[in-house]
Length: 397
Image (cartoon, rainbow, N blue to C red; front, side, top):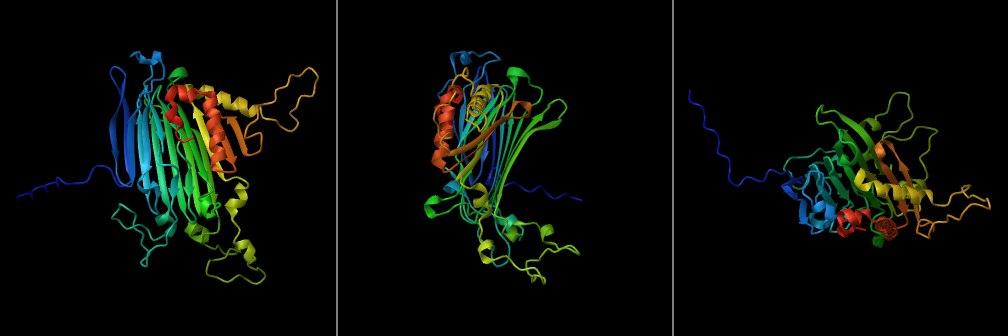
């Protein structure tokens, strides 16, 4: 029996990248030339590389196997400057040994547009996808972004983006995963500096933590290439939920078990249990928990490239005045720190060394400009990022 002929593939077939998906591979070609050997992306994501003329130092011009390369600048942006309901952004990056990359967002803050209700049929279509999405409004309308970065030996990533700005009634979740070489030791370790921060919204329109849901999770894993085993080094999560949207809860949480006092969204309250007053139902939970801050963020540092920066921030934090920390002896020298925004009470922050040599900084400020001036001032004062990656690395600060 004659077999049917194989169908001829269309020469006008779309690119290999899926909607909202991007893939980047940074390699080091002989003698010491960093090159993006892979760069793919598709709407609504856009990745724009820029070959910087900055050179870290004269010693790095040597083409030896131990020298580092000049950094490559990558702009991560989306069409329209933000994410619409249902947009899913997935970016995968690989930094091969001895490469360096700077990732910023040149179009300013990442806007998270408000969630729109599903259509009459209960089906939400994601922009760029032809498939029908689930009718669950929480799953269909939430904007999502994931970043997966693999950092090789002696490679370094400097990721200092603008903050995300969630609009009123928006939902957003992001997961950023960084994988380093577990077998590297000493100066051959992978290095990373990651900034993740979020603002209260559009203050010019009176928004003050009025979004429905914002979740950010940062994970750092160590992977042994020989055995393939992975080990979790750091996990940091921030969840801002107004706790008033029943659509944002899972179906299991809405199930009322026998004998419990839980209420179904369509059932009347039992006798003896009164509904909360109207003034309490409109309470902004996120605003109350973040008060008086208008922006909160996290800074993660690890590796030999950022060791000096981590030590500097730890010293600055330990130098801050504390209740009961004053040495009143007559022989003690004055160690009062220089005036700063943090000492004036406009920035609240903490720094700690955690496992595997990581330095974790948590901060909150009254507004974006205050946080930008404070953090940018500290990074420029220490100077290692400018020396290793150039002034462009602090473009967003």
